[in-house]
Amino acid sequence: MEREIFFYGNKVLDFYNAQNAKVQTKIEYVLDLVRFEKQVPIKFYKKLENTNGIYEVRVITSQKSIRILCFQE
Image (cartoon, rainbow, N blue to C red):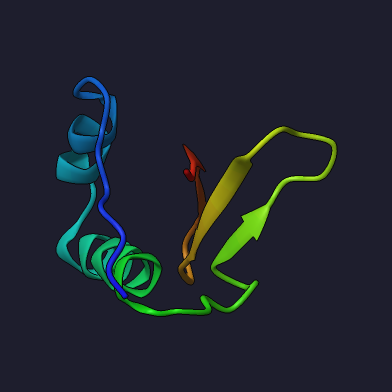
């Protein structure tokens, strides 16, 4: 199973490019989990309660915790 990931606008890419290489690698790892795994662990991908299809992609590093909001068809 493969999900397609689309970024609307440049804000996510601008944020990604502003991170150091280690954080960029972690973001890529988590996005690959979302893209390729049939069931993504809730630690990395969670449907937000009381919303209509809004999900949160979680990237946790030793320095920071990053949240990327997304939608799924």
